[in-house]
Length: 395
Image (cartoon, rainbow, N blue to C red):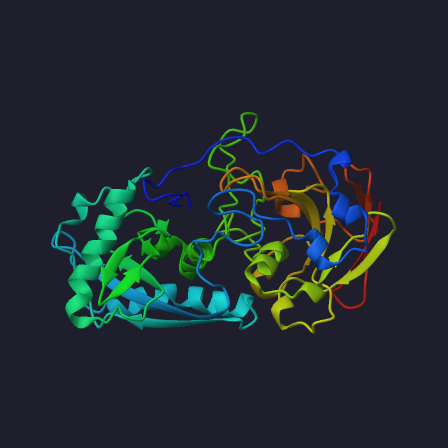
């Protein structure tokens, strides 16, 4: 969702065009001069705030270990929660916690402490202007009011992130913004990260929690804040439904392998950094389940193009959260660490451009190949044993 607070001043919607592709001459000398290791393909962070470089945004919460969340259920004098609705509200978000723990391969453990009942907000729901462009001040006021209203019965002294979920009876709390710059103190704890779940949670369920949590961990929005001029209305022209940080309701909401690596959910040993001087071969197991893979099993191939850009190949099969995809095989995309959230830091390469399915049938089938346009490197894809995909990168 278009909800990041990039600074303590305001929640700003970024717009613009992605950076132009780098030329082959910009391949870093450090990459070309020595054998390739995973570290050679790790793009350094090149934007302020949420991005696709390493390390993740300095304001991000750690993505491994234990994440301690406070879940506050709030209602309003003009929209009181209906009797018996507390369990429904909690259950609607529960699958988001399961998603984070499952996709991380157990490297992230989310512990949630919930308010005992509905917390009545001090102002009516209409006093909180939830529309696109919600200001930082209004957002923090909403979260701060919820924390203050719950404080007498809730201990915030050991909390990493605050989740505020509104009653289903308040549809004007429309969407679910996130801030990594909360700056509220309660029970002696300086609270910096919060997500407010609005009415859209009833359409997306727990996936909205997992998407917004991705931002608190440092991941950018992968849908476009501004649709392409030649494709108006297509805010998902960059990655389609191939990552939860793009189209939440997409058929393939697994996190990209690149972002799993960025978060520490994949080990360097699972990353094949293609050698720019000779052919590189990898046998990729499906991204779904890669967190439980053996350390020597390949999860992704990276072919670095410049200081900020790389091509990535991963294997998408109908398993895990990808069980609804209509096409499988080698998914190819570019990552540009210099492109901000919402402007296309990741762009999927479509193996069937012009098809009526858009990017839904983007993966390359076994027996096909693709030529990277700026370097001329050829990426070939073959069927491997079981559900694996064999990738050969020939510079």
